[in-house]
Amino acid sequence: MDNITEKKRQELDRYLASVSCGILQYTLDTNEILYVNDRALEILGYDSLEEMQADNFHGVAGTVAPKDAGVIQKLVQELKDKNTTEVVECEYRVVHKDGQEIDCFGTLRILEGENGRPILQRSMVDITEAKRTEKLYKETTEILAGASMGLWYFILDEGEPRFIVDANAAVLIGLTEPLTEEETYRFWFDRVDKEYVSKVEKCVEAMRAGNSAEVIYPYHHPTRGVITVRCGGVLEQKYDGNGIMIRGYHQDITEYNEKLLEKELINTSIAQIYDTMHLLEIATGNFQEVGSSAHVREIVKEQGLAKCQEVIWEVMRKRIAAEHFESVKDFTTLSTLEERMRNTCNIQMDAINVDNRWFRFGFIRIGKKEDKLEKVLFVSQDIDDSKRWEENLITMSNTDNLTGLFNRNAYAENVESISEDEIGQDLWFIGLDVNNLKHVNDTLGHQAGDEIICAAADCLKLAFCNVGQVYRMGGDEFQVVLRGTETTVKSALQNMEKYRRKWRGDYVAEFTISKGMVCSSEFDHCTIEQLSKTADDRMYEEKKLFHSMN
Image (cartoon, rainbow, N blue to C red):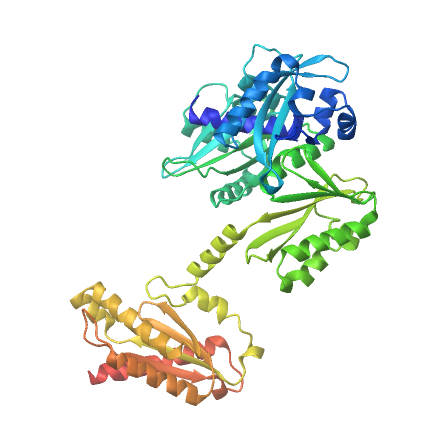
């Protein structure tokens, strides 16, 4: 089986385990059952874990048919010998409470419990009525087809994007004949509703940045007309080819009813996106921790919103940095939640956790009945990498690549936004321009010119770093903006001259700078534009004088 097929099989297996698989967990040393989900209870004919324990059920001996117990025990022993957490597949029979043997397909995996205690997790899918001769890949593919879901892979490199789809996804997008991976991408992309293209592209960009993401959009199917599609995916971290690979799913949700959509939301998409999920039922006051599989842990049951509120605040108090707690407390106040979510299905907030990492948390509406909020998911996810990436982009967009100074874009954001009321009487603008740069570029080359520009920038940084902000406006032009006294400005300019006179370059021995400065106190009323222009005009006057004397 090739790598892509194996990855697809793993995705199908995980999906099946999350929605229809019975799960048993028990200790390896004592075979004591620690956890059983509802599906496993149903397969075995029990109503609860307590009932199983009362019936002296334990581990392999109590749930696997005697003829297959040896096979399961052998596989478990192999996992123990390998000391691995890998998943192995197996086909076996279990014994129903009434003595009937049921054919099952499942998986075995050893997990680490408390104090390093090994725990075996065994899954079971009742395949008694299924076609026993079909392979697992076909079975799970059919299950996904029944859910109108297919799997895909994007490969993004320097050329045309490549789109790899499984059989289900090919049917869902309306592909009826073999196409190249590039042609498949164009076939799909050209049928995405034009008004939603930007949303789809933003979703792909989020995946490329390393985040899980999902988007719902209208799709113009070649034979069925407009259908509603839900797509989600993540960056494939282990891809070692050219470019990057994104993997995900494509689902037709056109005919999904609200209940099925809720189930899929919890069991597939949200479970892949968020680090933690808690389902809150407003009316009953139930609060549950929802895992990425069928496992659900009751935290608060029928104790009302006040108790749920207490639990949420306690969770957040332990997790987030103390200085963020009050704002987080306001955001997570349940008494105002219904009003805040009246016209939206999702509200969220970003905060710093105790490990100084960014994370995002929020509430997602589940279902809607007569405009009344009934259920919400309280979710959180680590967004530190994407947040730092965004911050880096902002820094890069405001930084001059050659000198490391603030650039014209930063000047527009930091300075031009100052209102007339904020200018005051101590705001200084200093315009500066390197003399004879064009002559240096023409005679010695642009390397020499860049050397002078960087030297001027370094002198300005050293002189003004503690009193103001320095901007490279373009070419050989600089602008310094600061608040202070005339003494402060003169001292900084004297330091700049001192650093300039000491400088010696590899291509150029020395350089000079023309300058012009102005203070807001010179005017009764002034604007930022007026101050900037006055400083430039005075700088050009000094520059003319320089050229007349040289």
